[in-house]
Length: 306
Image (cartoon, rainbow, N blue to C red; front, side, top):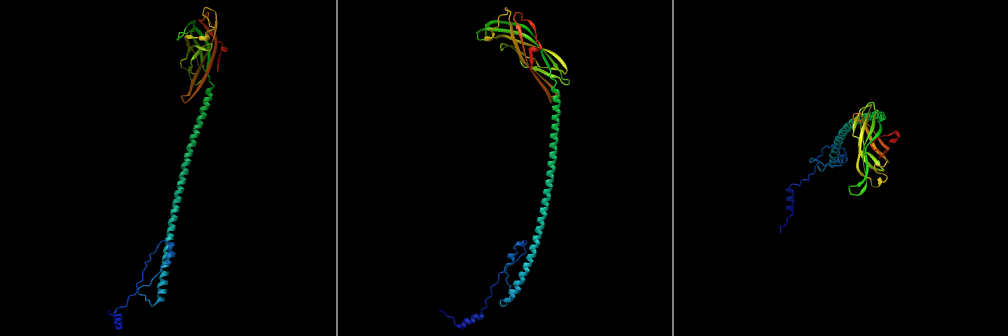
């Protein structure tokens, strides 16, 4: 092995350059707009520049550390305050703009609601006035009821016999032909009426033996008319209802009655407003089988009008 002597070590140490000191790490600090990072910024370490000597620690501590720190801190503090002030001004302007826009919208909404409310109020008022007006006209027109009177019944043919029904069952049969005279008086002064009736039925012992109906017609205002309705029944089986009914050769009075309704409709304001009246009429009369072909006048108390 090769051993170095003291002279060799000394000559190598004198000939070799001294080792260069370790270069410090530098941090480049840039101004920031965030004022909240001021505390962290002040805590950032500051290192000496390369020209500073390691043999002057006081210079590095006072000159390099304190002055640089104060300069950087003051610069960042002023920058942070200015940025914070600008941001506050911008936020305040935006808030004012939002409030103004919101207030305009509120005004527009209020104006729209007011206009809409006025339209609704006007519509409701018009409808109420129209309803009241129609009700007044309808009440005034309602008083004009048509006068209806059943004047007479003319028996054209009445015949009863014992025969067979459709199932060849022996029973009493009846045939009746008659005409009914009705007087209708329209008392309305401003409108005509449309008159029609339900089926007119003549009953014998609760059994319908003849049927007829009034055809619909128009009657002018303040007018009177007489209408005639044909009521007929042919070969109607009576079954148990014809016990008291005998042949025409016997002088017998047969009780009968008729039922029907008459309806009148008057259009007061075109077809927008109309008035309707209905009368239910029941008349009782007797028929003499010895002379059935005769005119039967009906007195006032013979009929009921409801």
